[in-house]
Image (cartoon, rainbow, N blue to C red; front, side, top):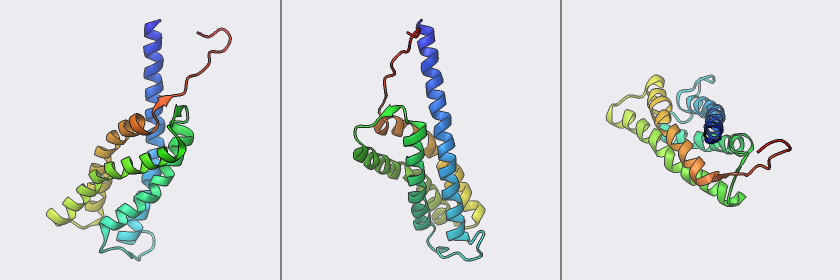
Length: 160
């Protein structure tokens, strides 16, 4: 019986992780496209924030954060409780902002320390290295501090 319980918990965590990555993938696409349009003129030929890559990165990630919160609340962690809807939104964005420092620092280091400013350098530093490092941290932080506990399910007939 203990193995079944552990197995079920493991499956639930993996399912959460996969849904988290799917929602994060959509939010990342929003961020990626927005950043490259604003800073490098991708798709448009006009780069209105070419000289402000960090500000552009933060701005598009705020928009992507809204996409991520909605996806996580209604799908990824729908079975987990929140303290209340207002504090969960505040916690999500406050903790998300804290974890956003990882890719921002990577972007700043690439730009300021290494002197790299190409589309490739920006995307590798912020959207590959920084986002990769920040994703594991976000999953743990959001699961631990925002979407706090699984909502208990009532066993149906014949279930224990």
